[in-house]
Length: 82
Image (tube, rainbow, N blue to C red; front, top):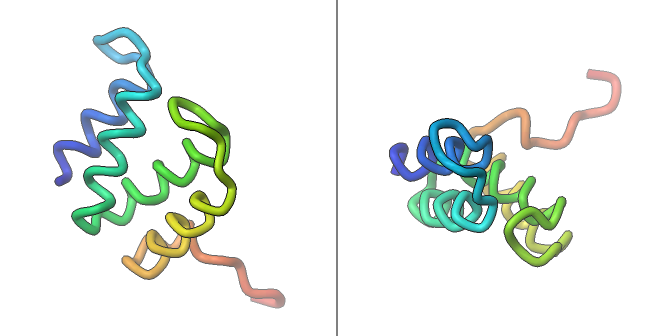
């Protein structure tokens, strides 16, 4: 599913294609469903901002937690004192 994630980044940024947030979000969700950690974090960001999808903070948190559980450390909560 790395290819879905990569294609999603192109659509989100508008590189070599018109910028299409809805298409990027769909590709990120597809890759996230297949346990691609970075795609989960990217999908979470889209839901948090409401870019290409209806803004949904609860779903954004769920996707962020999944990204963390899959090893995407930047999606994990920062520990105090660390």
